[in-house]
Length: 217
Image (cartoon, rainbow, N blue to C red; front, side):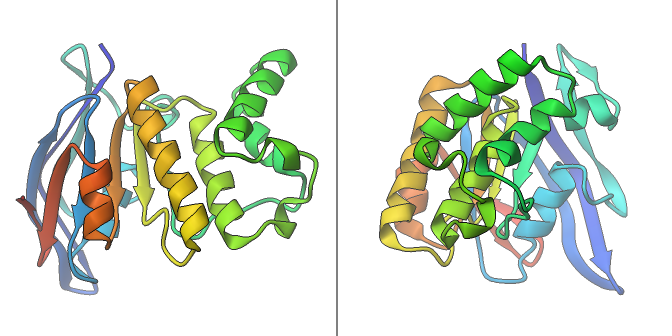
C-alpha cells in the first residue's frame, strides 16, 4: 500500500508568533507537491513537522499504512526523509557519507555497496566516491545530500529548496534527479522552491503558503 500522509488543523508558534495556522491537507500517494510562498510563510516549518522533526502545538500529522495510523517512532522515521537546504556532511569519503544511513540500519555490506553505488551514479557522483566529501562544490554537496536520502528508498521524500544558491548546471542535474525519482519510484515527493518555472516543470500539484496556511493553486 505505502504511506498515506495527512495533516489536520496543524498549528505551530515560535515565541508566541504563529508560523503554521490551522493547516490541513491530504497528500496523495506517489504525487509530487511543490510548495511556494514568501519567506516566513511557514514552508520550512511545515516540512519539518511532516518529517517529524517539529511537534505541532495543536493538530496532528498522520501517517497511515493500509488505513492504520502509525506511531511517530523510529520505524516510521526510517520510511521518510527530509533534505535540508544546508547538507551536513561527515568529514570522510563521499561513499561513506551515502553508506552511513544503510550501515546504521544493519544492512549487509554487499547491499550497502550496491545501493550506495547506485545512488551516487544517479546523482552523477560515482566518479567521486572516494573523494573527501568536504572537497565537493556547493552543487555537488546538494547532490550528495539527495543521494544520502535516495539510498534509503524513502516512501515520502521531502526537499527544502534543493537548488537554492547553486549554478544552472547543478540545478539542471538536480531537476533531472527529481524527475527520475517521480518516474522510477512510488514515493510521495514534497519540495519547496521559489522558482515558479521550476515548480511547473516538477510538480504534479502546486501549493501556495501564505501566513502559515496552505492555499491549493
